[in-house]
Amino acid sequence: MMTKILLISSMLLGFLFLCQASSADKNIGIYELRKGNFRLKLTNYGATIISLMVPDKHGNIADVVLGYDDIESYKNDTVYFGCVVGRVANRIGGAQFTLDGKTYKLPANDGKNTLHGGTKGYGDVIWTVKTHKEDSHITFTYDSADNEQGFPGKLSVSVTYMIIDNNKLGVKMVAKPIDKATPVNLAQHSYWNLGGHNSGDILSHTIQIYGKGVTPTDKELIPTGEILSVKGTPYDLLEPRAIGAQINENFEGYDINYVLNFNSGNHLSKVATLKDPKSGRKMELWSNQRGVQFYSGTMLKDSKGKGGAIYKQYAGLALETQGFPNSVNIDHFPSQIVRPGETYKHYMVYRFTAS
Image (tube, rainbow, N blue to C red):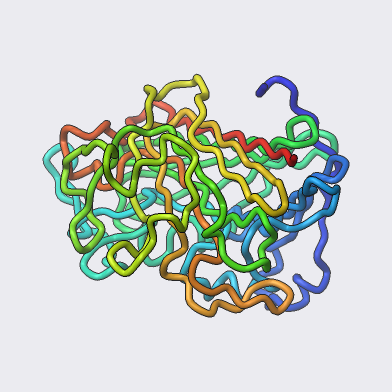
């Protein structure tokens, strides 16, 4: 699958977008990859996916990614629409960890914990467009400094977005420590609504996640260290189930890491299948990561999005392939520590069909 890569027309777009940015933001641009009816728009602010246009079962095209109309809104964003989060995605309990005998203190931006890299994570920086070939791909790079948001060592990061055939989006995230061991756990944080970003909620979408276990959390959403079976719980999505089927006054929604049924490495395995029954659009997700955070958009609340859309609760969902949250503080979780000479590699493929 990953060898059949064809990317069409990666060109600078969005004059109006750029006009709304200040002169200090002159290096922020909008870029598009296109093949047939499959069109992806991105910005190097946060290496962010702005939109993805795909057809439904009748051939009607819609944007299936939640987002904003202007750069300023992405700068003020608090829900991480479309960006790459890091250096460590998800939560780190107590906003600190110990590595090789030294304790590192991080910004606490989620209560007393660190979320998605801190107060200014990778979703809030301007990335460099390293390569941009009209018939190939686009690669964003970022050189993260030693002690940035409290994390040790310099880290060289790249994210490549690819259109594969005419219905697949490939994402390759690579990170190399330069001088110190450091935790690395990147995630792509798009919110999906296969009915269209402005079509209402995702509660009627059916979802299947190929994970037999979850990492339960405390009241602050920090993993307890346990791995529990999904059997007999609302988290059992081993067979397709409507997202809204279990949501009630006792279960408000999903925001939990699934333990996937395969080992990490370079091999891609299926993570999840999502389908919108009305439009017929289906998204299948593959990755090489051990975990995936399923978030049902529970805390979205009247966010003003693209084209005047108002994103209410459950307007979109996130499927963030990742290492286990808070693994830096839980020894028996798979390690996310990467040392100089080693390379962090995170691959994803999203396949879109309609019927």
